[in-house]
Amino acid sequence: MFRLVALSCLLVVSLVVSAEEAVAPSSPAKTASAEQSMDAESKAAENELKALEKTVKEPPATAASGTDEGVSENETTEGAETEAEQSGANVSQTSKPWIPEAKDYDWVQLTSGEWLKGEIKAMYKDSLEFDSDKLDLLNIDWKDVKYLKTPRRMQVNFEGHEPVTGVLQVSSDSVFISHDYSDEKFQRSDLVSLSPAGDRELDLWAIKFTLGLNVRKGNTDQVDYTSKFNAKRRTAKSRFISDYIGNISRTNAGEGGLIETINNNRLGASLDIYASRYFYYTPVFGEYYRDPFQNIDQRITAGVGVGYTLFDKPHLEWNINGGPAFVTTKYLSVLEGEERRVDAGALILSTDIDTEISPTLDFIFKYNIQAARADAGGYTHHIIATFESEITGRLDFDISAIWDRIGQPTENDSGETPASDDYRLVVGITYTY
Image 1 (tube, helix red, strand yellow):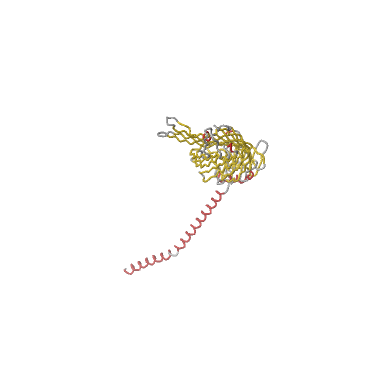
Image 2 (cartoon, one colour):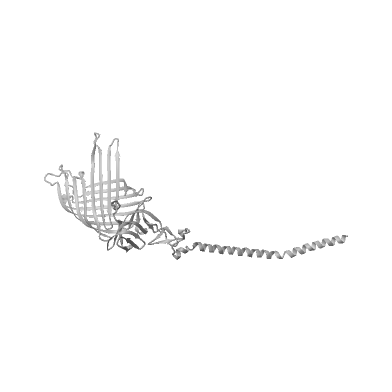
């Protein structure tokens, strides 16, 4: 009996050992097979993803074949429209660039790819004046303009060509003008200037007005008033400029009233006609000046001249001009035997510099010289140097230094001779339209 039990136990142990030995060799084979299956599934999934990405990146078939199954409103190009699938294919999937349709606004694209919507005021001296509802009045370097499109009629001036009027479109190297007779194409490098064709007279004007006011009350009652005004009317071929500057100061006279201590006014105007990109002539210019404290009741100057642009850079413009003029001066009072009115010829020379120091700070310098007979004042000059710092798109903070000189002032009837030099520092706020 004992032997039978021992034999049974030995048999069971042998069966268990045999089963373990039989199972052990098959485990690595099964693991390798599972790993191969997983690798195959991963590669298949990766291939499917690559195929999907390739399909998404390809443009729609309709865009490549050119079939006209649907047209998106904002996918116009120069004389053509990008076609899209009726199923609503995304614009970004097309291979043609998006260009807005110019109907109610002018559009400008910068070289950075950004689009601006608004109104073109003018382009002169490689600077585009653009009025945006959100960004206000902008001065954009012409080299930064990649594309321009306007639904309005523009007057365009080209080098060596008469001005052309029509609907304007400018690309990186060409200018297209459409009008009633035909369509014309020009080289962008020949473009000198452009402006609205004058459907609205106000579109041709640019206006700046500066006001400075100082009021004192108390032990000293004083009122100082200074104003400057500049207006320009520009077409593609001409430019009209008008400048005014006035200074009035009153202080207390000791009895509650105010007595005038400063009162001078200067108003000038000129008309420039462009013969080329750099040369222009001035068929007429004039100036009115009054300063009772300089013994000048009025001085009127009128003449003709020519001008030339020395520098025409995006951030620097420098012009010189001059010519002969006729000057008539009326004095408030003179010594006995002297004439109150003096008429004389004169030579006028002037220069103006406009430079951008930074995106928000401009420097403007104007220098006017007049040479005439001694009884007409002799050598006189008017210098004004201005720093304009931008507050908003239309408002600037203005600081101007002014120097007026009359080389040979005329004595009044009391034998008093006014000082030759007047200096003023004007601080004010400038509004630009």
